[in-house]
Length: 370
Ligand SMILES: Nc1ncnc2c1ncn2[C@@H]1O[C@H](COP(=O)(O)OP(=O)(O)OP(=O)(O)O)[C@@H](O)[C@H]1O
Ligand SMILES: CC(=O)N[C@H]1[C@@H]2OC[C@@H](O2)[C@@H](O)[C@@H]1O[C@H](C)C(=O)O
Image (cartoon, helix red, strand yellow):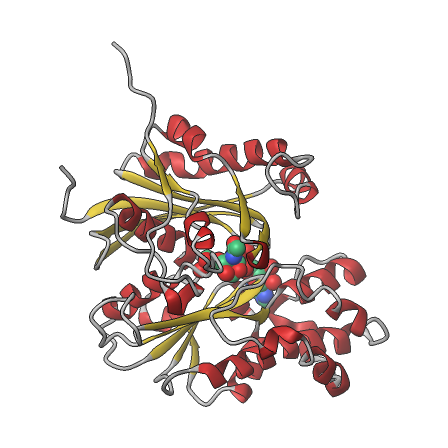
């Protein structure tokens, strides 16, 4: 018989910026967040990053995919090992190598069965495929968790969670609705590129992995002509829900090729903020506040530009007691419990799927023989 009370679940996420694996414990019954527990982070080594990057853009069976999957599984097992002892269930997102919503396919490398064996815990994984098979974008999946976070913080009016990772994505939530899958409770979509283009610029020109605190961008001047051309991208004409692959805006770097380092950084940072500004046109009602999560919240220049673009107050999620480095890992802990209990993980207004759907597979560790 299925349990109904809260259990500790351990979630893990390896994001598009490929810095490492986040892991976090959440106590939940799949509806309510009762408590947040310990967290851990394990960066990928240079050698591991090279193996994973070599498989970027590949589909299962493609060159380098197996090698990348083994690196990803081992890194996850390592960071989760100490926390798994306190968890009844693991949520394993894996590393997205390719995402093609138009072609109804997505690829998160890493095998849940292998991780179940390595951690000796049941593992919920492959969260995105079912949604895509049923016509959804397969992303974003954090929205139902964001709805639960809004309830956890006792919010009484609509608010927005904005995640600034490699790509930007947001969830507009109305916590007064009875459940996240109810029409009017959540609207979620990817806003556009966030940190990825600036990171790529930093790597290419300065040998840095990102623009720390946005200091380089702060010294630059935004090229409004480039921003206007950026906004011509057909993605901005699409109605949400909609999602992006990390490389969908690759041409953006060419557009700043003739600019100085500082001007190029300022322009790419502004592009991320302007994309969020455009996203705000889709909000069903004005949100009370915009809570920013993901690494981009540390970018002071980006946060100031967002403030200029948006009408509601913008602040990091820490302001309400959440952990902006761990929200995605916590989301997959929460979603794992929903998968285990047959609850939906996405709906028409979060991924564009035809009806609320529960995605994910569960693998159990091999039975121990005595
Ligand atoms: N101190 C900082 N100053 C400026 N930018 C920062 C700082 N710390 C992190 N970032 C940016 O945040 C990025 C990492 O963000 P995050 O960890 O949220 O991404 P991710 O989870 O890998 O991506 P996604 O959410 O798209 O999967 C870094 O690559 C960098 O661009
Ligand atoms: C396909 C994929 O891995 N998408 C990620 C990525 O990173 C941010 C954004 O693009 C979001 O759509 C999603 O991750 C978060 C955790 C989500 O599904 O909500």
